[in-house]
Amino acid sequence: MRVIALSTLKAFWADRPEYRDAQEPALAWYRDVLKADWAGPAAVKAQFGTASVLKDGRVVFNLGGNKYRLVVWINYPYRVVYVRFIGTHKQYNAIDAQTI
Image 1 (cartoon, rainbow, N blue to C red):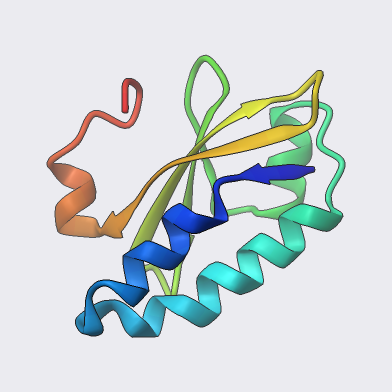
Image 2: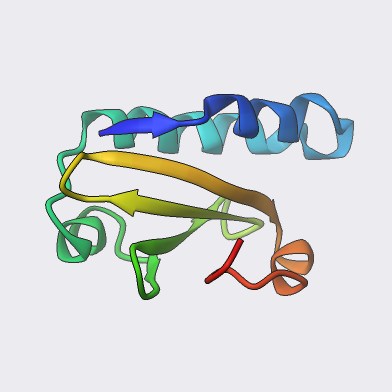
């Protein structure tokens, strides 16, 4: 899979010292996704059992022992994962994961 945009993930922990502990879990997720070849939501769930599959290609991942949430949109035919949001559970609760 291709991941667009690693820079969004990096900005999250680089710009805010209190979120530096998100770096390793986010990079581990990134490396795993680069090696993946997801044809559909079932393949995502098979690899990441705790991922929440939403409608229209949206998926929510728990990172850092469930401390952070990562929302992506996946274009399965083109094998592209677009990072839409990364934040704490509190920040996640303030957004609409389906439209962000």
